[in-house]
Length: 330
Ligand SMILES: Cc1cc2nc3c(=O)[nH]c(=O)nc-3n(C[C@H](O)[C@H](O)[C@H](O)COP(=O)(O)OP(=O)(O)OC[C@H]3O[C@@H](n4cnc5c(N)ncnc54)[C@H](O)[C@@H]3O)c2cc1C
Image (tube, rainbow, N blue to C red; front, side, top):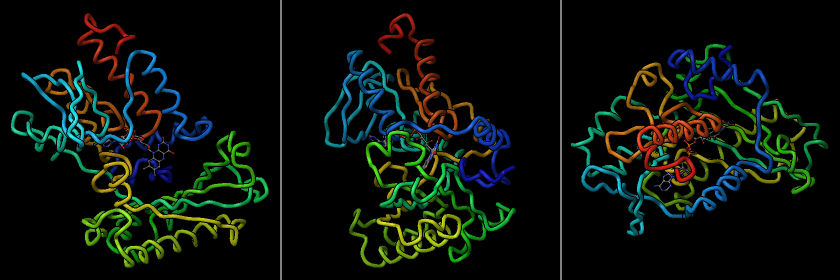
């Protein structure tokens, strides 16, 4: 019953039962996959924002939320540009929002005290594989595979995180290209596989201050070793791809830090412990007027959950400022 614990990133002994039950329940009707991949979510939303007078700025890191007279009034970007706003919604997670974006207001907001109540979720490895043969020719199907070394998931996780030479506690093998009905039309004769497992961010301490892609040969060799171990597991359960892999690349907690700004390479934002769900401040509202939170940390991990958190955040904004903003503007 708990075999899909990897979807919430915390082994059953430490996770919330409700969270585990929701993961199991959501699969009962089958999974969903966006046509043309994850980028189609942004492609669908951006025109809505722009049609309503908004501007979407790409490749621009936010550095700080600006506060004036106790109210959020804009964002300062990493390049120093300041963007004024009548309200600010942060979707980068509570660690980034309270720990970094509001770093100059720690005393007033008790940011560090709040963050001491949550733990980051586990770091992870993800092996991205490209194959020059169609899924159909290889006889692959859509079903996700969960490979565990045994039924005691807590022990498996503990064994691996304390000694990475031990078996991976879980390997989630998925077949994104097969789930995407547009794939064969856009990329005929090819297919992709992803394999995810846990990682401990402390294993990367010796490379953490080196710039992206310049971590050196030792890091490359380390990644090569983890990749080979993951490939071995995949070949065992998906033997049809043996000898057909055209390309693979491993992401580590450092990749997740550098690409998505999760500082310990977290898989899913903050951990889904029982205590997390008792924290009343994990809501769209914040102590700063006109600053709201959205995303997985205020609800739960998951693409659908994150989309629903947007709905919650809009509700919170309309409840507070409904007279001033009609739903179209928000
Ligand atoms: C490997 C992996 C596989 C997953 N598979 C699934 C799955 O199959 N199904 C599922 O439902 N969920 C899956 N998830 C979980 C899902 O991706 C997340 O729960 C969801 O994306 C969270 O959405 P979010 O908007 O809260 O945060 P994010 O998607 O993390 O979005 C936050 C965004 O903020 C940006 N950002 C961070 N800092 C800054 C800054 N300073 N300035 C500007 N931008 C910044 C980041 O680049 C990022 O784009 C997976 C997660 C991982 C890591």
